[in-house]
Image (tube, rainbow, N blue to C red; front, side, top):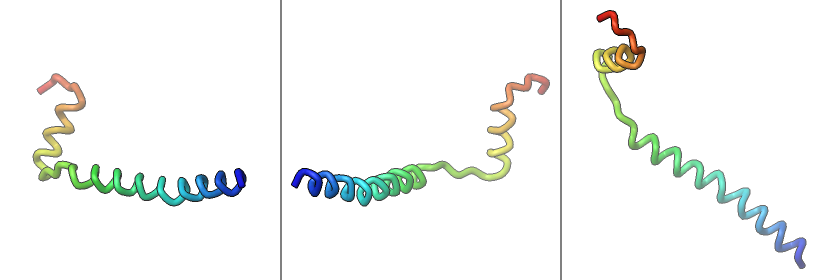
Length: 53
């Protein structure tokens, strides 16, 4: 009986864990910020720390 309960818990975890990860990734994807090319280049230059400008 204990072995069957353990197998059920493992099976449940194997099914639920990927679904939880999927939901978390989708939620993060929905919150991303989009920018146009000029804004992206400006942000990339700002991240380099190059003070020659």
